[in-house]
Length: 223
Image (tube, rainbow, N blue to C red; front, side, top):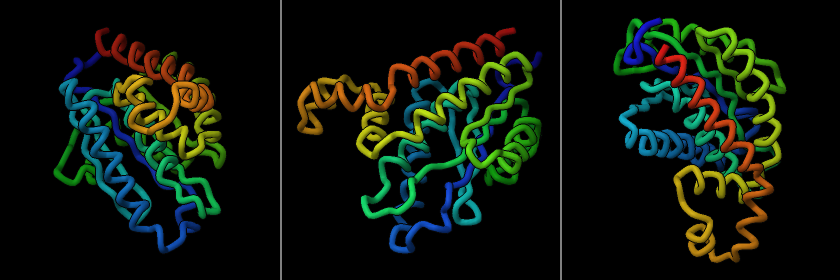
């Protein structure tokens, strides 16, 4: 197995039903993606991890995460950001499909969407083959890991599909490490209201999956 420094994660994604997004919200959609990429970079930079993304074809994006154990966190930030930003008048739910590929990268130019290597080949083609109801898939060099993550990804999809914009906003606050007391004070809501939103967002299960993903990826990288 190659050492940790040679293994990356590539996320390839697109916005679900982007053609149905009202033109008045197109700028908001793109700005939301850019802000999500920036937030993911800020959160992972503290862990000596770099996150770089390109947007192409208007509604598609591709990014490289230098520490693959943070790829699921990055995907979650993107999807929660979209769910949070969804306008009240929107007739569709804002979300993204994301395919995470883990492996070496042979070529990494400034335009990350033009790179090449195993991580890219595990990511891009997966998005093209992704089933309609599926919005998250992870493919690594390790078969047993893929089997486990396939099940957990399906469960996470089911949770995210039920998020309201308020619940997605709470998830982002929790990902940033804010306490429930701080969240309540910033939002001007009671602790009971915070608890209700956290519970409704399924945060307990989401956090367990995030932690489990990081654990098994890091374990494999040390092998």
